[in-house]
Length: 490
Image (tube, rainbow, N blue to C red; front, side, top):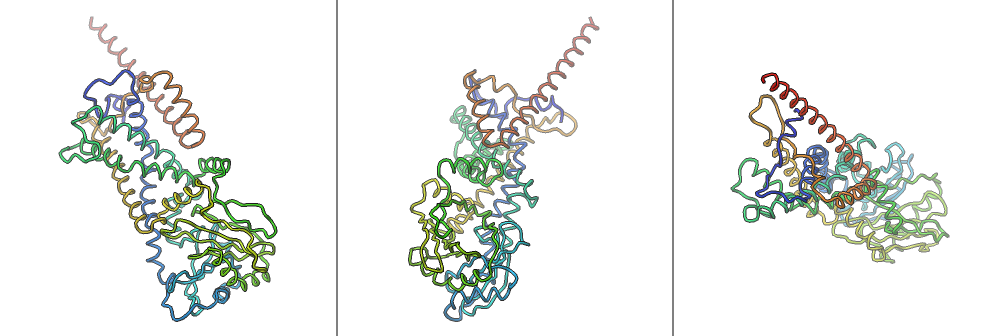
């Protein structure tokens, strides 16, 4: 694809009347085009893997139903007996926590610290609560205790199974998704304003054909899902490597972090945590066998105290491995459960060390918790998952239609393979100097806060400058040759 071919055409959707001297449209159109062409492959991969991750909780329930459910044969035995049955299956490992069966027919999940599994992973033994017998064991991941299939999909979505370097792809996609969405909104509303009476805003034009049909689908579908895309971008950045650190710093500075109960017996220092669902449970403490055994024996009384203090439902209780550490009982995140309370208890004395009720959380912490669950597809159960899957399918169609528009704009009267051409450069000159300065300041600030966005934007500008320089050189060379040829003829 030659540079002259890239630069020869103007706007992909020519206006019906001349553009005003001062307009943001050329600049946003060129940015939207380049970002769409170069970043869309990363967004498409994140979209496909994200759609799979959205329905992963349901897939998990179907694939592992024999681990998660049993036919109840009687009342549940004490939780301590269930834990000891699991310990008999894994005598070399240290028990770390337990999730008692929440409903009849559910299994109890006993989690063990297993250094061989990797960061944020534990080994879970599933126990029939009626008979205190193991029905199997599986590795689980993170504070959501995800089972292997959901863990595999999560790691695919997060870093393509490439480890930390692979996280750059997902962060790049999340960094640009909101920019592309907002730019698309501006362009679509501007197109409607300039072609009022001949353009639709929220409905598909079934009469359109060819490239206009792709443009109509791209714009209308994009406008319907724009809010969802901005939400996914914002929540996705909280899990990213570089922008995520800045988000964490801001939340800490504004006291927006998720509260956590104090776990040190005799200490009043408050703690904070951030259960994102993609990590957690990475404590590193030397286990004392006698302490663990004592705390296992006290677990039923600890659970009773927690329930008496309003911490009930589906629970996870930690089993301290050293003296001076309280057992933490927390409500796990479940569909349609909008609050998650927690309590820390000194099992030896039955004293409540600290409580954290969701109703007392800062509003920002509540919104963050709900946003995380909504992004993961767990806040509203199957309805949440289907909505995210529909959003992923719609976004994938918007991306594909965008590439179809690019392909259909290619020159058709030249030989060889060519691609569609970008909008003309020079958009920065179409806005006022004051606006250009303000834009630069905002771009620098956003680029610092979202580093991959800033670095890739600088790369775009560098490539654009190089292409422009090459084009000007070739144009001058062509004009010089033409002038020389003309002088020879005369």
